[in-house]
Image 1 (cartoon, rainbow, N blue to C red):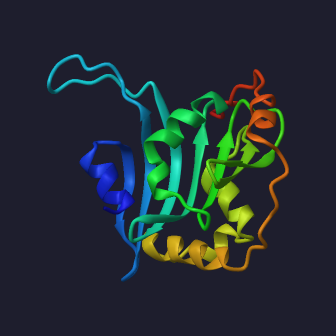
Image 2 (image 1 turned 180 degrees about the vertical axis):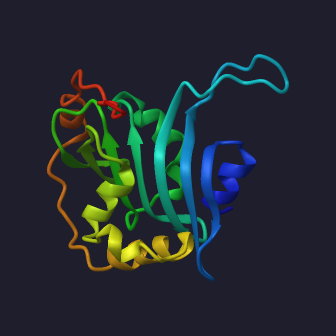
Length: 186
């Protein structure tokens, strides 16, 4: 089962903007993913999720995620997130968690999988990922949604592998009280 099939079959997508094939061998997902379901009020009415991986950018091949980036409101949601989606990650997966309540960045390993955890204040995951892969918005301006994701995926092959620099426990100790700044009209 592909990650996209798992997401759809288990009703884990939340406000998806893209869920499909981007090439003959790659699939992608953009949107939010449910980490903890909302309260079920009736057969047809469910409250919004209690916890989500927001602004997800996921690129997968067959049953494994090649690239995954998202926003987590709190690092406290990490274990719940990992339990729900861990079967699709492996040692080759590039995973970036942009976390609002972290007071520092780190690269850590959890159950044999490497994660980059980075503080997120005001920016979007999309903009952060473009910085991560050294692309400018203008590089993608006239491309289709599929081609934008393929371009990001192609850039990942140029990245140097970074070494683990924190333990999971050290990352948990970086949880602070930071809240996301809301931007809007002044």
